[in-house]
Length: 188
Image 1: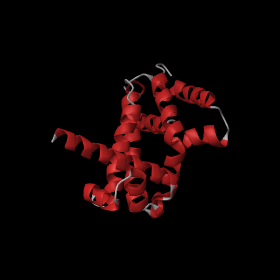
Image 2: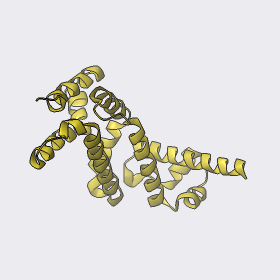
Image 3: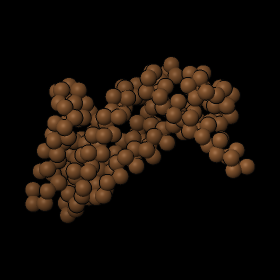
Image 4: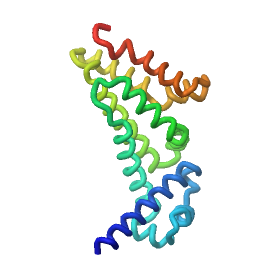
């Protein structure tokens, strides 16, 4: 029974891996269960049995990827350097794919939900990591400062620096540090 449960779990992970790969390669409306099943080495029926169809598969893949993002961004509060390194690593791995998803979100209710959850998670991460920079501020100051931190750490800022301005990965990391410094150092 244990071996069977482990095999079932591995199959589920293979299917989710395949779904994420296909999702990153193709526009969302053209993603088919056939393509996912083929990539995972299973039948479409196995995908349906495991995830209940396309919607359930997208939801499960998004949930797993969200957990991955939380793990990748797991830095202690106040560790600005660690936060920037984690962001750059995350955006280097998935930034272009996330940008494509955001461009498609207006046409897909499923993507709207995934994008909204991503925004909530990013904002919560900024609140936690930069808590000391937000402490002691009035409500209006705190809201403005948090909005600044969210914007600086956003995938669009990475895209502007890295893709549009052509900065190297190291220069992009340095630029984020420089943008964050006046907002995160005490006495500023």
